Length: 121
Image (cartoon, rainbow, N blue to C red; front, side):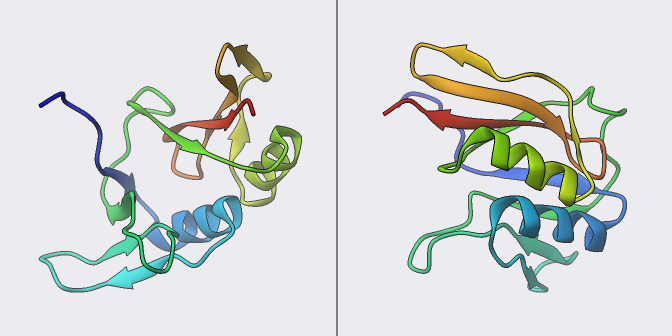
């Protein structure tokens, strides 16, 4: 079996603030789950699908220095950049083109590093 990422956990020193950011960015509801030792907030996902990640109470890496979670988006990247800013995050790069699409780097409200990717059709 080839290794692949199946889920991401996003640490947040202020989970409620992080939830507002990801709801704004991803255009969907972030849902709290209390079934484990700590509360978690599932990222928006398809009704019959499963979440690709969650937010949890924790200490993020030093301002953008941790790993980068990449999310695929279907909207124009300029519109996604605006949602990053509207949600309280920071756009940290211009759009970068690669053969299969384009993306940009951003930071969420907690300082976590993000990539927002749009496939070329």
